[in-house]
Length: 246
Image (cartoon, one colour):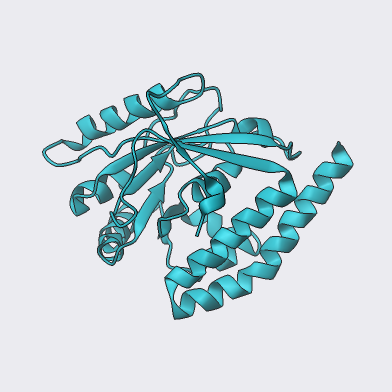
C-alpha cells in the first residue's frame, strides 16, 4: 500500500511538472486554452490515483451562464473533483497567496489568470476581488472554497470567509453550492497516502444574491452546503456523465 501511494504521488508530481509549462504558455495566449490544459492535468491525476468522480446535479445548469461556485473543502482532491464535475464551465479559482509557494504548482498558479488573494492585506484582497468581476463579465465562472482551508472532513464546515460573497454580490452572479463527498477517504487532511475510490460531487441549484445582505447570504449558503454534505441526499438529482466532458 505504501509503495503504491508513493508511485501515485510520483505520477502526480511528474504530471504536474510536465504540464506546468504548457499551462503557463497557453495562459499567456488564451486563458481558455490554459483551462483545457488544467482539465487534462486533472484527468491524468485522477487516472494515476485510481479515483473516479461521480457528478450529480439538483437541476440542469445553463453552460453559457456565469456562476460563483462555492464548495466545501476537506481534501486536496477536492480541486480535481470539482473541475471534473463541471466540465462545461470555464473555471477560475479564488486561491490564497500561500498556494503560490508550492513547488511547480505554485509557479504555474502565479502565472495564470486565476484570482490570487493576499489575506494579510485586506485592502489588496478586496481590490483583487473587485477586479475579478471584470473577468466574470467575459464569460468566466469563479470557484471558491469559502472555508479558506480544509475542514475536518466529518461534515462540519469551518467559518466562511467573506471574499467570495463580496464577489457574488458586487457582480450580481448567482452562487451555486457544491458538495464534495468522500474525498477525505482518498486523501485525508493530515495524510499523504492516496487511496483509490470514488468521490461524489453534488452540484446544487443556483442561489440568487439580489436583495440579500452579506450575512444572510452567507447563512443561506452555509445551510445549503450542510444539507448537501456527507450523509445527506438531494431530491431528484440530474446525473452527469463525465465521459461527455468536452
